[in-house]
Length: 227
Image 1: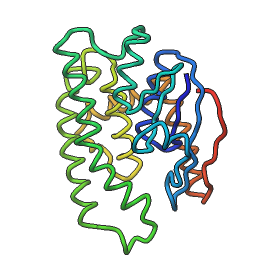
Image 2: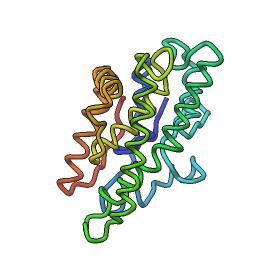
Image 3: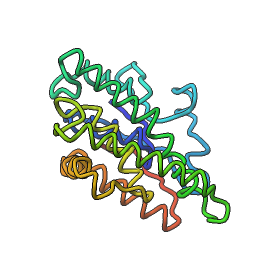
């Protein structure tokens, strides 16, 4: 398998964690990134394989799968053990709902922080009101997540793609200054459990190293490698 990957792409990071959790070998082709231009210009191969020119893109033989959710489901069908989805239908639906919430409801507020705090280098040009509104929405979600986690170890009845997706969005928010409060004990304990998982810890270490390089003004250009 081959994965077209973004060095600071949250959605690619989700897939890399899933591949590690399932102990799958994969070639990694990283799209160059810098703080000034992001992932532009996009490599021709990525544009050819994805109608929007986005990563992640997984290639397995002659099959091309893009979008992190679709890749999750393909990896689960291809290698069902260890499972990353619950087996019971209702809990499986809750897992899909939680992953969708992380990507489609929670992450847009995180993206506001990314666009205004990470990409906008001039503080005077940042949308302070937009950032404040996004931070408040994030804190509201933290309270919801904390409530959900008070009587369970994971977002569903087992570790799943819901945890992977939630963690990556929450970790981005934390890195951009929105942290769970001391009152969110269950959520903070879950973050600690997630951070201790080897597949997740490896990803955190890799992304922190890339962030340090970006803040030092480097352009991230990585050749082909292995997961």
